[in-house]
Amino acid sequence: SGDHCYLHSFPTRRSSVLDIGIEVIKKAYELESTSNDVLCAYGDMLFFKGQYLKAQEIYSQAIEVVPEDPQGYVAMARLVMNVGQKDEEAWKYLKTAIEKDENCFSAYLAIIQILLMKSRTEEVKEYIEKAIACATGEGNLTEIYGLKAVFEESQKCEKVLEEIGRAHV
Image 1 (cartoon, one colour):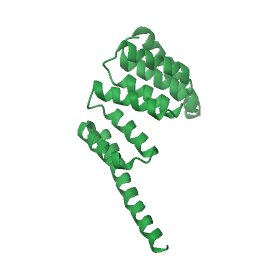
Image 2 (image 1 turned 135 degrees about the vertical axis):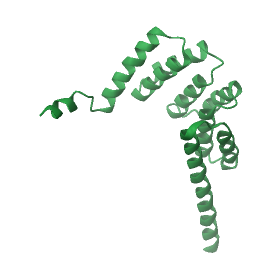
Image 3 (image 1 turned 30 degrees about the horizontal axis):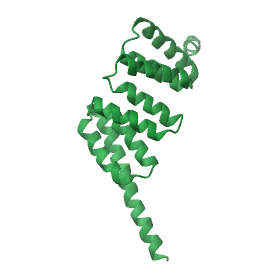
């Protein structure tokens, strides 16, 4: 039937969609290689595709071309944190992003991720509050309040487990 052909005209695999996305963003990059939004979007597409070195090159270009925009630093931090497991290097990029824009919501989220991975829970609350203060829009608020609720519940569970452990000693 006609529906059958229509459905097959769309990419069905994630990699196909990424390939199309990369081509679209690459065209935008060729037209506007000084736009931080375009550079970061192109780098993100490459990152999701697993082309980490090329993504790193594009993120470096974003930082070089628009050094006052924090998003290039946040993108580079995500790359080194997730691919290279280099939390200290990521931390430096994120601190630079916040120096460029103290209301950089995405930098605060990435910092919270690092703190949670390193079990530095005493600092998480502070950064959650900073993220809440600079959250814009319903999506950001939902994300940070959801993270806050999960964090608070995990802290309660940790205390209960400690009490149970002491009771059985």
